[in-house]
Image 1 (tube, rainbow, N blue to C red):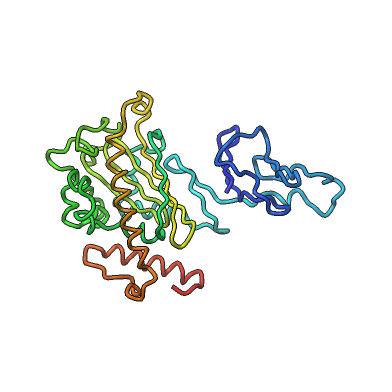
Image 2 (cartoon, rainbow, N blue to C red):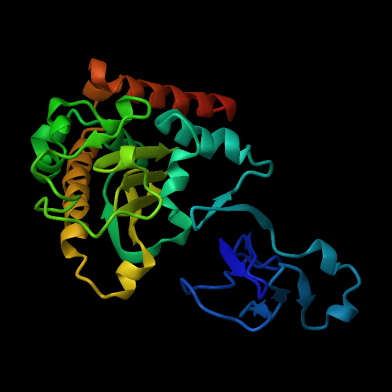
Length: 317
């Protein structure tokens, strides 16, 4: 996809494909243009609004209508400071999908607003190349039955996770920091100061939200961690993980390593486990999807969601 920001600040998204012969318009991850995008193949030129504005000998080709051969537009919605896109020709309601997942987890759609995520600043971004299917990664993120086994640092900060019940198991519940823990850091030391809007009842608590199909939102008092998954093969997923902080914290140049390191370790531990599971995904021993213990009922709901979506599209689960 090609996402543009016009001078007025508005975002628009298009398929990054020239309408003429399908050449990729932009091959760089990011950049700037003055007024238009030009295909390097035959020089078809498109405005930032996606309209075809020029092409060699265009005036001599009456069968090529500029209005009909603009870039294919992609639905886009800005939320939490991110551009949320949907490839469907008729996208579902943002409120009934994304916001509904937040409400199902937190109990309302106001609690996430207190973190003022759209005002936060990127402190660190780490990219992971995981040799596992995206659904395996979601299943792992949603449950904490494994936490005591592979997350020693996390269960030290959030002792209740050692009991196997994930934060997402209870609506509106945030896992509480241990009594001797001062912050969501790798060694439990003090964090970077509570975000201005975070309520007292949200302080010293961790909330995890799965926004289907591919986003994780992690809320702690002094920062927010957001995962975005990009499936590229049945057994491979690229993940971008952002650590977001109050702008003054990032601008101050303070050392973020203790804050970042905690979830970076959790990520590596989780992804290693997912890759281990992926090795057996084709085995007949796993054909029925494994055994779900009582604390994993929401994993079963995720399975139902996936198979339900496949059924809507007319495919066999």
